[in-house]
Amino acid sequence: MSRPLEIRQVAPGVVVARSLTTLTGDSREPGATILGHKLLVLTRRNGVWGILYGQNTRLTAAVAATLR
Image 1 (cartoon, one colour):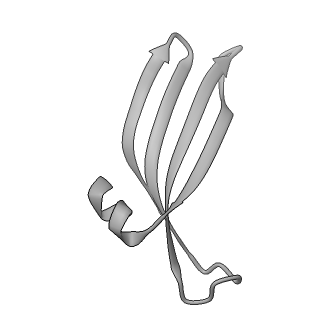
Image 2 (cartoon, one colour):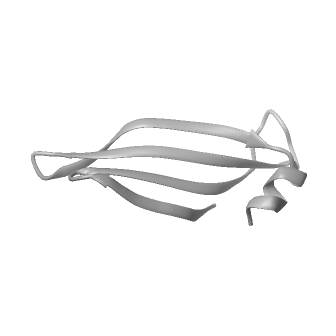
C-alpha cells in the first residue's frame, strides 16, 4: 500500500512524487510489516509518462510515525 505525501511539478514534463509505503507478505520476513518512503522522479517524453529515477528507503516505526 502507498500513501502519497507530495506530488510536485518541478519543471514542464518533470514531477517528483513522495509516498509512505507499507509492504506485507515478504517471504524473507514472514508476518512482518515493512514501512518505507518512496521517491520517484517521473518524466514525460513524447506524451508518455515514465519513471526516470526511484528510491525506496526502509523506515523504523518511530521515523514513519513522524511522517504521517
